[in-house]
Length: 134
Length: 134
DNA sequence: TTGTACGGGACAAAAAAGGTCTTATTGGAG
DNA sequence: CTCCAATAAGACCTTTTTTGTCCCGTACAA
Image (cartoon, rainbow over all chains, first blue to last red; front, side, top):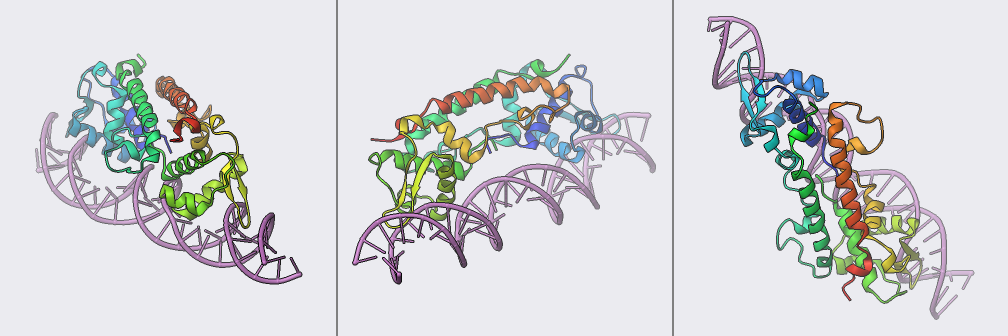
C-alpha cells in the first residue's frame, strides 16, 4: 500500500523513546511499550531484531532493559525502517535484475528508482537526535 | 511494505499499453492482458475502476474494448497509482488529524509529510506520454 | 536460589492481496 | 430481432502478510 506497517511505526516509537531518555539509561520494555502505546510483546520482537543488528543493546535479569546501541545522532530513520521492513523498493521491478523482463515496462523503472532514491535520502537525513523531543 | 501492490503495477502496465497504441484505437482486454503479462480477469476489475474515474473509456459488444479517457500527456503516474491504491500516505499518522494523538511521535510527522510530498511530486511529473515507448 | 527481565520459537487470528466465476448488460452485425 | 462479442458488476475464494500472543528457556543480580 506504499505505507509503512505498524511494525515500522512501533519500531520508530520505541527508538524515539530510548533517544529521549538520559544517555546510557536502561529502560524497561514495559515502560517503553506503555508510554508509546505499543503492544509490549510485539515491541519485544522488534527490539530483539534491533539487538541483533546493534541498533539497541539489551540487558537481561533484574535491572535489565534496553538502551540505544549507538549515539542517537548516529542512528537514522532509514536504518530503523529498513531493519524492520527490509530494503525500500517501491516496485518489485527494481528489486533485482531479471525479475521484470518486459521491455515495455522498463520505461517506468527509472521513475521508481528516483522515488526510491528520494525516500532514502530523506529518511537517512533524519536521526534519532532530531526526533527526540528534548 | 512501502511498495506498490501488483494491482498498482498491473494498472500501470495496462495504461502504458493503451498509451503506446494509436490514438483512439480501441484495444481488447485480452490483447492488453496477454501483451503485458497480466491476469485478464484481474485487469478487467482495474479497468472497470478506471472507466468510472474517466481514466479509460470502455466500449461493449463486438468491436469493443478500451482506450485512454484523455490524451496520454494528461494522465500522470500519480493519478493511476492513487486511483487503484488510494492516496499516498507513507504513515497512518499523517492520514488525518486526530489519528495520532501522541505528542512524542509528532516529531516524525514532518518527515513523513516530506516523503509524501516528494513521492507525489515525482509521480505527478511523469505522464503516460513519457512512458509510452513509441 | 529466587525473582526479574529479555531471547526464541511456535502458534493463531485478522486483514489484505490476488484472483476466479457467474450472471447481467450492452451493442453490433447478419 | 436474434445471436454473438465484449465489458459490468458482484459474489466468492485462496493465499500471503500482518499483527499479534504464549510458553519456555536463559541470563543476571540481589
